Length: 256
Ligand code: OAD
Image 1 (cartoon, rainbow, N blue to C red):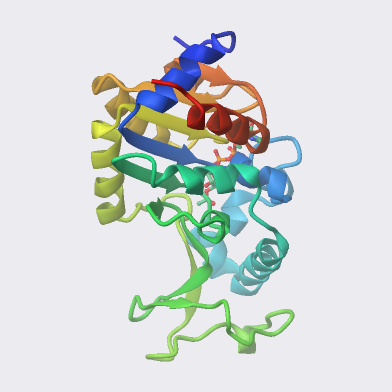
Image 2 (cartoon, protein in one colour; image 1 turned 180 degrees about the horizontal axis):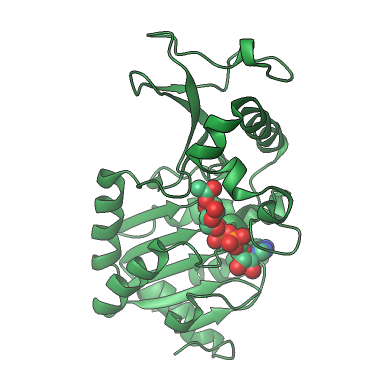
């Protein structure tokens, strides 16, 4: 049962005694770094129509428009810095015998904070994928123009094919291998930490169900109630960049 009023002592004990930890993050984890979420009042999907900017149909209709939006997102990400929430999650990974962080975020703030035991299930803003040969390429150091026009759209360095952002768009499948790995870790965890996601995209349910079936405790960190809050044993209704370092500080001084 979700509960935003709980004994802090019990929450700290759950973190301190856990062995296998599964973390699931969403856009809220990067909000305190200045990156917008999607479905909040000032979210991306309020400014950009997802059918235009996050479907293959939209991309085929106007690839220049779509590439320029993702290019401006890359610039935003490049200027952002990991916040204390990202840094705390990175510190946590060496503390537990089994740990996996699964992020829906396409930014690189978890990696820049030092996370290594992690996977990205919605793609990567710094990658492009060739529509001909399916090759995936890092674009971070590419000398892209300030604004794309049709003639300057990214081409595959291997086959010259037309490329798209390597982001999972609406109506597309997640990478099966990554999903299997994530599902495996969700089903063996004894602590699932959900950070900054509305849960509107379906995978969160599946992961929370697997964790519940294994008897895991579920902790959600999110100032606002979302679709996954019903699974939470502990709902910490605070921003992640404040809650995570505070909780972790207490876990590190927990006396068994
Ligand atoms: P949403 O925009 O749906 O949800 C963001 C959540 O973050 C909300 O529940 C907020 O309450 C919460 N939040 C805001 N500030 C926070 C903070 N400081 N600390 C903790 N939580 C905070 O974003 P996602 O759930 O990530 O897909 O959306 C899932 C997917 O939908 C995204 O990965 C994206 C989108 O379509 C792709 O781009 C492929």
